[in-house]
Amino acid sequence: MRRAAAAVLLLAVTSCSTPVEQPDVQPPRSASPGSTAELVARAAHTMTALPGGDLLVAGGCDVDGCSHATASTFVLSGTGTTRAANLTDARDAHTAVQLGDGRVLVVGGFAGEGQPPLRSAEVFDPASGQWTRTGSLAQGRGGHAAALLGDGRVLVAGGWVAPSTYTDTTEIFDPGTGQFVPGPRLPQAADGLAAASLADGCALVVGGQVSSQIASGQAVTICPGGTVSRVESLATARFKHGVVVLESGQVLVVGGTRDDTALLRSTEVFDPESQRFRAGPDLVAGRYKLTDSIVALPGDRAVVAGGGEGGEIVDVGAGSARLVEAFNGGRRSFSTLGVTQGHLVLVGGYDEVIRLTRTYLTAPLDDL
Image 1: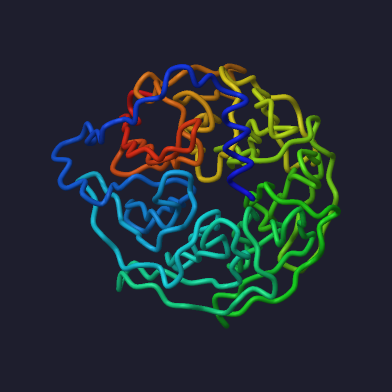
Image 2: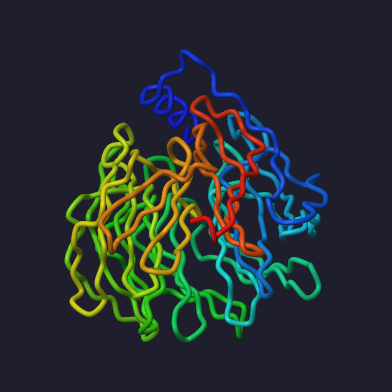
């Protein structure tokens, strides 16, 4: 089963002699934190920016061991949290992408351990605070990647479709019609891959698990016209990694694992002009399970949190990485990271024995 195996892995790669204490909820360091009542323990959720600077937290698992998903959502701002309407389908390991009009598209994922991946998709309208079911995927998938294309459509790529079975298919969501259409195929079927939106309107898709505990270095660009182009492969094959577009337009590829056992400290930087990767600075600690766990900062820097102890800043220009003191302490896999009201916010995640945490840690951007 997907998470039973993950539990064995986490026990294998971390020391469990001293249980990790679940962090208490911590309010923002800006003025009034308001209510934090919606910050229930969760992991494998998504966090997506909304117009105006708030953050939408959607779905995930809400029981230790992540045996089933939740439909609950909330909006997080600098003044606290506000309950939002429930998803139409409980889900975790899904993707969430902000559309060009400010709405949020949520796609696929799993309703629970041992259940087939979801074909359903839904859209959140921040103006009404409601979710609306939209067209369905042709193929249910979880652990896939998604990115906004330059024409306003959304690329959905790869993913887990059945036990020990991954897909090389892509689908493209058109917000104008509310429907998915087939996209080009990837070079390799994979889950645990990652995608980023490039300045030219194309999307970069990298890495992934192509068979049990076997990583791929595949890298392609997929453009709105449906063309798929191979680019130079990753220097290190990886899956369960993260990607973020830097201020310069380059893409930082962070961490992951080659074999679902050892966590990678390496990073790579993709230059859209040369279509090549170069080595980036090593992380302080190996990290993986980094969906929605990386945020770009000015000056070609990025913050990555979760997937390992605490969090850290990666400075591509300086070729260095350093820990973020405010986020230190405690391992949190499948946590999320976002920016609201001038603060970096870290929410949720589970520890090395898949106990959920109520993590809510913040740091002023000016201090980074």
